[in-house]
Image 1 (cartoon, rainbow, N blue to C red):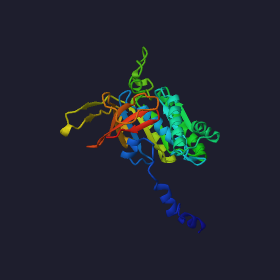
Image 2 (image 1 turned 90 degrees about the horizontal axis):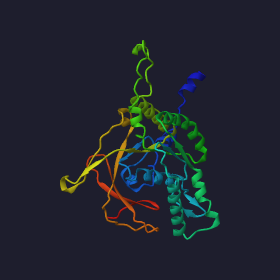
Image 3 (image 1 turned 180 degrees about the horizontal axis):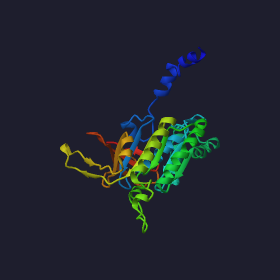
Image 4 (image 1 turned 60 degrees about the horizontal axis):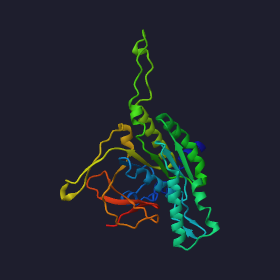
Length: 312
């Protein structure tokens, strides 16, 4: 009877169920992304665009919002005080740029509340302790990083946790993986007796997608990733609307796990419509839109302190 009684005991209460399922949207600190998407665990957001359109900058902004504290000595910094994990597949991540954005946001928060003392000088250092960077130079290293990430995420649960995984250029190894072919058989050897190549384009991305889904499910993470691609735009749409086109080139396994896609492009001739950074360097202007139907186009710019929306 004791066995039947234990079998009938509930696994969790209704309160535990709602606490596990109902979560507030994740704020990334990226204005155009937070306005367009209610980001939740299990979502995979893909930022697509050509080189130099601000994709990596959005990851830096998201990382800064993760690792900035909520409040220190009465100063509100507007961060989530969590750990940030970034997989750098291009080996081009600019750590100095991350420090620049953090320093600008810390100084802005302190000046807004007229607080600056030696007690607050450790804020930047504490932020960097919560940032974790992993560089991968092949798809095999990426798969290995995803494998070892599970115990890393478990160890971070008692250190602020993590709710967002960042990946810079998921298509970095596309052409290398696509070029993999079975080697020619040796003289006198039949092709049927040769070992099959396991690290093919489709198998690699299927394994990456499976590992990411397992990580998101077990640790309740959202994924924000960039993808280098060539976009074409034309001003021949109805009512002067900008038309965007995007052609998916990664395998179906990756395409299936992407829940949202945003396209970015640079606007060289856009007039400056917001304040100039403190360094007097002109900000760079860009456009972004969701890859969904008739979604609107948003203009943003990159300043010394990060991403800001352009005022119409």
